[in-house]
Length: 251
Image (cartoon, rainbow, N blue to C red; front, side):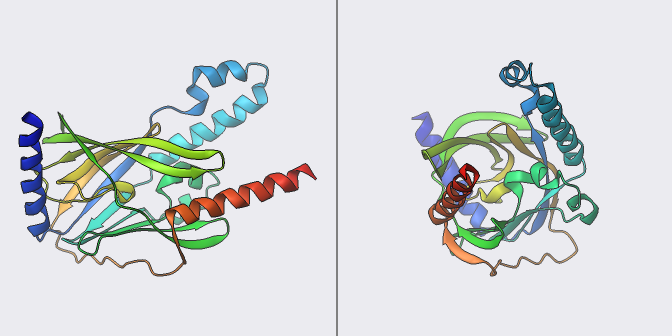
């Protein structure tokens, strides 16, 4: 009964969300919850390989420092949203920049009225426009307060077609029904409230600033350049490239 009542409330909130005419910019920060150099198993395995461990430690320390300066922006109107890392040229020239933003690299585009979810990304030396399938959310009757907002929990699973089979990665988000904005970081969307926190594989994105209905105009341009592929096709391209690289290394 409690789950049924929660579902009704969320459906009503979602309908109201779609009817709002809000525009805005949400600033997110990224936090790596556990670095490789901090993991006990890794430390133990590299006891006799101090040079290798120090190389990993250097990468982790530089990544941690870079993330203090990198912002991720979600720009939205009532139908569309774009999520991408801040364009800072002096940081982009840093060798550790791509490792720091990792899964946040690219332009994530959502259109809830046309049911479009795409990511424009530069991978394997080519520009792609990757279409993603609908997200199957499981709404959890669990709350916590983030800042001044009461947030609800939702979970889903990211599916990746890896070389050795399907890889399932849990995704946990906390969204605020009080903020009738059905968007969030990394293209995760269509929840009855703004996603204030997202956690996926030892990485967390969290809201740093919310600017609703700003005075300046917000332009949301759908990415159009790049080879159009599905998420499954994109995974397959990556698998084939890695297989070819492994074959070349054997010769």
